[in-house]
Each structure stands twice: as structure tokens, then as C-alpha cells.
Amino acid sequence: MKRVTAYALLVLGTLALVAPQARLGLPELRWLARFAFPGEALAGIALFVAAYAILNRKEAKRTADAASPPRHDKN
Amino acid sequence: MAVPLPLKVIVFLMCGFVLGACLPSNPIVRVAYNGATYFPRLIVTFAALLIFHLLSAAVAKLILYHKQQAGRLFLHLVSLYVLMGIVSLIYATLWIGELANLPLIRTGSLSADIFGCFRQIQKTFTHVLSEQPMLQVLVGGIAAGWISAKTPAIRGVAEGLIRTSDLILAIFRKLLWFYPLMIGGLAIGIPMKFGYRGLALYGQCVLWDAIVILVWCVFMVLFCKVATRRNWRQIASYYGTVWPTGFGTGGSYDTLAVNLVSAEKDLGLDPEIAEVSIVFGTVLNKNCATMSVLLVTVIVARLLSIPLSLLEIVLLVPPVVVLGLETPGIPGGAGYFMSPVLAVLLKVPDPSLWVTTFIAVYSGLIPMFSTAGNTTDDGVVGALIQDRLQPARKHAVTKRAVTLAAHPEVS
Image (cartoon, helix red, strand yellow):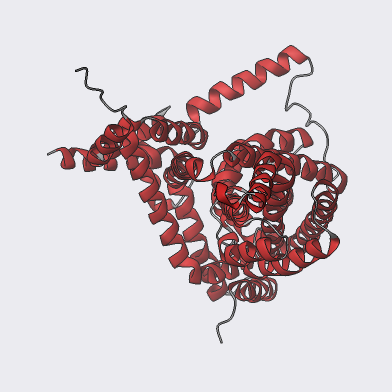
């Protein structure tokens, strides 16, 4: 389920990054510009970050564990 | 025998110019031109997506992979490459002032009084950040790459960004066979749309680029002699090997192996300094490409009759420095990835036409001169680091060698 959510976020992120620029590019894809709104590219970046965070959460957990200071026994 | 890519590009470019000049109304030639514009327009559509991944991954890679590998060299190297990027763009701007005879400020482009000027800059900045996706991507890409690489809890984001960026670059490398065909097709458009004036302006651009980059290289040779301990023989041997290779390949990554070997063998760099500075430079340093981008900007603006002042060129320097850090080292890469951002910054009325014309002009000999300059600059930076910025390390090594010779039991 988490992977499906992440891929959905990737699709939405792609749309958010492509839509504002679409009116300048290929005529066949200009219809995408209908979905553009101010600040949409920043929203797209946030969606991509969220998607990658979900997809690579095991990697992040491993890195965070490796980066955390070693526990010292008190006894 | 395989024909080198730059040679293919030049042949197709010339064929495009001839076809556009001789048969501008021929329907097949027009179809070839229109077909060639599809790929650059597709790049414009997906430019924000591509630039976000390339830029954020470049920042994340710098922090994740190179910081530990390069150790204390990291800060020196990044600072030197950024400084060199800024200096070379100021140098190019001075040349533009000399060669292009641009007005200092366009009438009506900025208010006369200083407060009005600041208000206008603030207004433009606010508008640009809220309305322009490419600039949002520049800021957001750096932030995403930086934060995800620095924060262990979201390190997976950095890994995702790097994997996607590598995939994008791999696709672009796989499409390199198409590059000469596309340039040939786009070249048809220059005489077809702008007549012989277009051809003359392209020739002028190549001439300007050659002058600006050759003079820069002469300065760098003199700087290397004055600021480092290299002798004339070493410098001549390094430049004699790497400059023609960079010129011939037209791509930084294609020159990497020769540059590494020559920096150690000819320039006498320690292997660890050569590896770090040359590899870093190949990824980070595109200072001559950014100089060429400014020159091409002036020429394309003239072709499309877009008014341009020296102040606007100066205002382009900071974003072009940032873009220079993420531009992939593939032939003509700067043209693909910088032109959509420049179109936004200069408020070009027809960005598609700007991008296709820009890619056509930023081709042939121009990326070859840029690569030759970029790659040799990497070796000079390595020599500077070794001789001037790492003396403590050198002394420590020497001192240890002397100690070992005198007291072998210490080891």
C-alpha cells in the first residue's frame, strides 16, 4: 500500500513539475498547463521528496541507525 | 573506423546551414527542421523535472560521496571552483561589453532612482519565486539535495534523487547518436528563418567564443606558472595533451581518463590530489561552458531581436554559476539545460524558439572550445591546491619520510 501511495505521489509530483512549464514546450503537451497554479513546482518538489522518502525508507533507517551514537551500558 | 561525435556534429551542422540557405522553401527540408525541434521542445516541457533531479542529486552527491573521500580538500575545491566560475563569468561579461557593444542599462528596464531600482528588483524576485517554476526548481532542488543528504533520517530521499538523476543522464548518453542529426536539423532553421544574417551571427559567435576562451586559457597558463611550482615544460606537456583531447571529444566525461593520467604524469600532481581535483572538476567545473552560454545568449538575443543590456547579462551571472554546477558533462549539455532557464530570466516572448535557436547556436565548435578550457582548468586548480592550499599535508609527508629514513624502527 505504501509503495502504491509513493508511486501515486511520483505521478502527482511529475504533473506538478511539468504543468507550469508545459505551455512553453511541445504543442501536443500544452494541455497539461491547465493544471498549473502559482508555486506548483515547489509542491511538486515536496511530493517527490515524500515519494522517495517512502520508497527508500529502509535505506534511510539503515543510515540513521549507522549515524546514531553507540549506546553505552551503565552497569 | 568510428567517426568522432564532434566531427559528426560539425558535418551535420554545415549540411544544415547549406540546406537552409539553398533550399529554404523545400517541403522536405522544412519537415527535417520541424522534426528536429521536437526533442528540444520536449526538453522544455520536462525541463523543471529534469533540472530538479540533476541539481538536487549533484548537491546530494557532493555531500554524501565526496566530502568524506576528499576530506579537508572538499571545502578548498568547491570554493575554488565556485570562485573560478564567478571570475570567469565576470571576465566573459567584460568581453561582452567590449565585443557586443551592449547598452549598460535598457531604457525603461529599471527605474532611475536607487530605491525604485531596489523595489523593482524585490518585486521581480518575489514574482519570479512565486510564478516561475524553473527558479523554484533551482532553489528547491538545492534545498532538497542538501537537506536530504545532511539528515540521516531522510537519506533515502537523497538516494532516490541520485538514482533518478543517473537514469536521466544514462538516457541522455544513449541518445547521443541523435545529437548530430538534431543539430543538423536545427541548423536548417538559422538561415531559413534569419537568412545569411543568421549564418553571419553564428560565425561571429564562434569567433567570439574562440577569442574569449583562448585568452582565458593563456591567462590560466600564466596563472599556473606564477601561482604554482610547475615549470613551463610540465605546463606545456599537460596543456598539449588535455586541451586537444577536450577539444576533440567536446565532453568533460569523455576527457576524464586522459586528464587524470596527464595531471599525474605531466603536471606532477600527487595521485590523491589529481583524483579528487580532476574528478570534482569534471562534475562541478563548467566555467568555460558558462562563458560560452553568455556569449551565445547575446547572439541568440540578436537573432531573435530581443533587446538586451549589460546589466541583464550581469544579473544572469548568479543563476548561470549555479546552473554551471549541475550541467552534465555531455556534448552540448549546457545548451539543453541552461537555455530554458535563460528564457525565463530574460522574459523571452517565444521560449520554444529561443531554446531551439540556442541549442543550434551552442553547437559545433563552441562546446569543443568550452570543454578544452574546462578540463585544463581542472588541472590548474589541482596544482594550486597541491602547492598552495595543502602545504601542511606536504610538509607532514616530507617530515615523516625524513623521520623514517633516519629512524626506520619508527615505522
